Image (cartoon, rainbow, N blue to C red):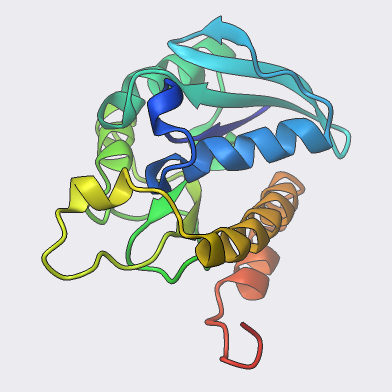
Length: 194
């Protein structure tokens, strides 16, 4: 069993914001593999299904970002999974360019409150994650306001490419190809590739 968690904030007011890219990737995975993410469990919306022959739970915590760890801890306990081997968390990163990916097997929260909460509740930072760049905060902009803002039309196109890559990377990780996914997606895009 593999649990894939996308981070975001519930309710319509947050749909399409930079902070909700984790939810957006879960929605894409759900669409692609015909998984309905509507069951309420462990303070999350979840869906059970099969991706590439493997049983998965897709989850969108409904605790609001800063309390994501409460939901993730409950999911880990309920499904009795090994965080290091069977948990993948997908979320936004303001230190990466729009649509750029960074895959890690472990690491600090890097200032991300959702990840800070998960590390605190799991008491470990040893879990796989896909960070999706949402662009650097403009100067004089409040970080909270920035991550709750929406993408421009141009950025949305770049984000859609990033989402597609995140879906492919998630499937690779599910198949035990985390190193290959890191090699494929962690490189910086050169201007001609962008």
